[in-house]
Amino acid sequence: MALIAPRVTAGLPADDARNLARSLQDSNDVTVFVDGTVHRLPGDARDAVLDLLARLGRGETVTVSSVEEMLTTSQAAELAGISHTYLRNMTDRGEIPVEYRGTHRRIRQAAIIEWLEKQKRSEAEAATPAETGTKETGPKHA
Image (cartoon, helix red, strand yellow):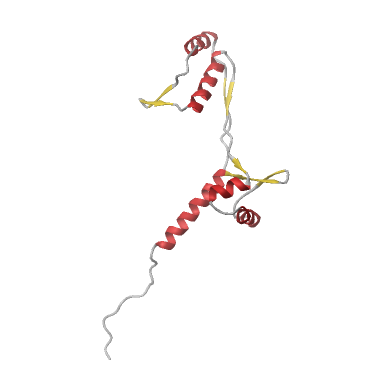
């Protein structure tokens, strides 16, 4: 899975930066309109958007990027509902990709979620009655 490249936005022109800074002064409310629908942002998202807007309001160039969640083997095992040892064995066999930070294993949260979805699909397929391929014929006569 590839990470999305960072997006760099140049600082706003001075007049726009001043107007934005004035609008943000003493404001903690961020309401987003998407296709005419109002969405109120939760606290952490609101804080991130306010920080972004404040930086643009100061005329700063801003870079926005994302970080993929990396889990320890204990966290990944807990999320998957399996033992730590079983998870480590799966990483040793290459069933779940692992990255090393020194001697410590780190597993992408997305890899665990993908593995869980694969398990659910396998269970659903196993629960579906399989076709036997035999046809019933009429009653046998002795």
